[in-house]
Amino acid sequence: MNFPKAFEEMFRTSFGDRAWESYQQSSTQPPVRALRLNPKRPVHKRLLPKLSQPVPWAKTAYYIDHTLKWGSDPLHAGGEYYLQEPSAMAPVTALQPQKGECILDLCAAPGSKTTQIAAVLEDSGVLVANEIHRERCLTLAENTERMGLSQVCVTNLEPRTLADSYREFFDAILVDAPCSGEGMFRKDPEAITQWNEELLLQNADRQLDILESAYHMTKTPGRIVYSTCTFNPVENEGVLLRFLTLHPDLQIVSTKLLHAQPGLSLDSLHTIATRYAPLAKILPETLQIDDLRLDTSRAARYFPDSSQSEGHFIALIEKRATLQQQSANFPNRPSAKFSKDHTKHRTKRKQFEHTAQEKVVIRLFEQFAQDTLEEHFISKQLETHRLRLQGEILYAIPQKLAEAPPPSRGVLRIGLPLCSVRSGHIVPTHALALALTTQDVRRECRLPYGDARILAYLAGETIPCTLHDGFALVTIDGVPLGFGKTVQGTLKNHYPKGLRRKYDFVLSKTPHSTSETDGDPTTATT
Image 1: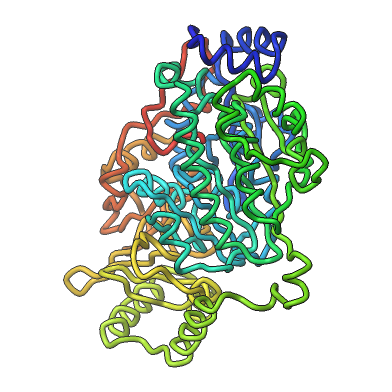
Image 2 (image 1 turned 180 degrees about the vertical axis):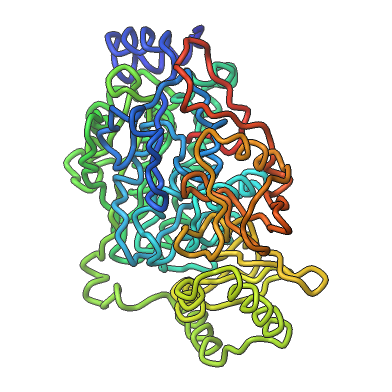
C-alpha cells in the first residue's frame, strides 16, 4: 500500500517512527470485520458457531470471518445482524445511552450507530437520526427498517436547520463527523489518493460547524461524543480544542474504552505543532496546559495494529453549568425560542384530533389488523402510539416522539410506517413486517434455513403456502423477512421490488480465502 509522503510525515510527527512502522505493517493485512446481533431477533442457531470472539468494547458484537459474504445471507435481509467495523462501535459505547433518553445521531448514515443506540433504548425515549445527503439518508432509513426499529425519526437536514427545532432538547448527541477517512485506507485503498493536507483543514472547519450545532441542541447537563474514522490530530484533538475554547461549560471526560490508546496530551500537541504546520494553523493561540477541561489525553484512539480494528478517534464531552449559569438557574431555563416553540407544541397536542382522511385510513387499518395481527400488538399501537397520516403513509409514532418539537421539513420517517391505501385497500409496509415478531401475527409462513423458497421469496417470486387466505409474515425460523398474501395455496409476493436480489445461504458454507464484495449498499460499516 503506497501512502502519500505527507501522510507518512504527519503520522511519524504525531505518533512516532515506531508507530508508523507498526501501522505500515498492519496495512498489509486484510480489513477486520465484525457484526452486531439485533436484540429484536432470536439468535439463529446457524450463527452461533461463527461467533466465538466478542468485540471487547461493544455488547452483542463479534468478529467474523472476512472471507464470507455476510451481506448476501437471507438472515442479513431479515435484520438478524448489522455488519460494522469494530472500532466504529466504540463511539456509542462512550456515549452511554440510557433508556428513556432523548438522543440525536447527527451524522447518522448509513445507520450503524443509530441502530446500535436503538438497541439500548429499546422502545423508550426519542431517537433522531439525521443525514444531510439525500441518497445516504435513504440508506439510513432502509437500515432502520431492516433492523425493525419503530422509535426513530429520520431527518434529512443541515445541522444548523435541525438546531432550530431542537434547542437544548437532547440528553446526548453523537457527532460521528465526516472526515478524511484514514481509518478506511485498508478497506478502501482508493481513499488514499484523495488525502491531502488541505483536506484536513477543510474538514476541521466543517467539523467545528457541526459541533456548534450539536452544542445548541444539547441539554445542560448533557453530553456529546465527537468521533472520526481518522487518525490525524488536526481533525481530532485540534477540532476538540477549538470547540472547547468557545464554550467554558464543556469538559472532556474519560471514555473508559477498552483497548484504546489515549489521545495526545496538550504538551504533545504543542510539540507536534512546531513541526507540523496544519496542526499549528488550527490550534487555538492561547491554551492553558493545566486546564483540566481541555485534557485531550482523556480521548481515545484506536489503531489497526493495536486494537484489531480499522481505527477511530472518540472523545466524550460533558456540558455542565458554569458558576454563572448555576446562579441563574440556567439548567432549568431553556432558551426563549425553545420555550415558545415547545409551549406551542404542547398546546397543539392537547387539541390534537385526527383529520377526516386519517379517520378513514385508521378504520381500514384496524380492519386489516383484526385479520392479520394479534390483539396485543393492535392494543399497543393504539394505546401507546399516536397514529398520523403523512402523505399516503399511516405512521404509528411513540408518544414521547410525537410530543417532541418536529422539524417543519426534511422528515423522511417518524416512528413506524404501518400502511398505505390503494384503491380502498390497505397495503402494509415492509417496515411493519420487520418490526413484528411471530407472536404478533395470526399467520406465519415459517421456512427453515436452507429452504429454496426463501431465496425465491427474496427474489420476488410467488411460493406455495397452505395457510388460510390473507396476509402472512414470511420468516426464516422466526426471523421476519416480509409480507406475502396467501390466495388458494399460493403466497403472492409483497417483498419490496427495490430490495429483491439474489441471496445465498452463506452461513452453511465453509470459509475460503477469496476476498469479499457484498455488492450491497446497506452493509456500509462506518
